[in-house]
Image (tube, rainbow, N blue to C red; front, side):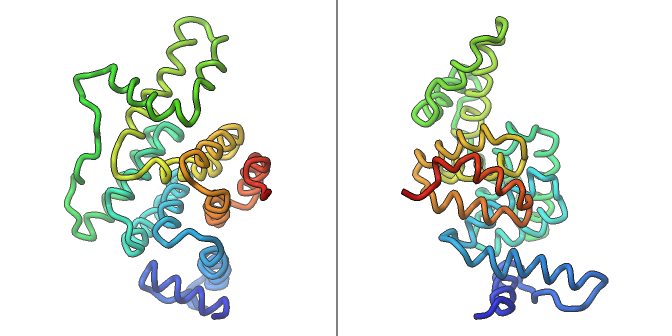
Length: 255
C-alpha cells in the first residue's frame, strides 16, 4: 500500500470514515495531519491499534484536547478497547496532571459512552477496602518498591518535618495505592502509558526517564517504549518526543 492507501485503511479501522480530501475550509491541513498520524506513524513499530489508542487517549487527556479526546474514545472502542480500559487510562492521569483536567476528560469520555449505549457507571475496579486506610500505603508500596525502590523517600529527606515523610507517603498512597492497585489495566500497560503522559506534559524529563526504567522492569521492551513515544508525537509535538527520547537515551539505545 502507498501512504494514501494506508491512511484510508487506518481511518476506516478507527473512525469508520474516509480520509480527508479537499473538502472543507482546511482540507489540505487535514491531509497532512492524517497522512502523518494514520499513514506513517500508525504503521511503524509493534503496537497494535488497541494499544495505540490507549496511548492517544492518554496524551489527549494530558493536553486537555477534549474534542479530539471524544473522537478517540470512539476510535478506542472501534479498536477493541473495553470501556474499563479507556476509563482506567484516563483515571490514572490524575496524580500527574491534577484532578480538574482529569474530571473534564472523564466527562468527555462518559458522553461518548452514553452515545454508544454503554451503561454507566462502569463496573468498579477498586481493590482496596475503604475502611482500611493503611492498606492504601501497604498495597501501593507492594507495587512501587519492586520497580522504584526507596528512590523518592531518599530524595526528599531534606524537606522540613512532617513533609519529609508525608510527601513520599502521599505519592505511594495516591499513585500506587489509589490507582495502580485497580484492575482493568495490568502493570505493564500502566507503566507504558505513564511514560507517554509524562512526555506529553513537557518539563518532566527526570520523571520520564525514571518511569521508562520502570516500564522496562514491568515487562515493556525498548521498542515498545519508543513506539509509544513516536506514536504520541503527532499529538504532543516533535520537540517533546525528542526531549523524552534524549532523556531516556542510555536506557533505550540498542546494544
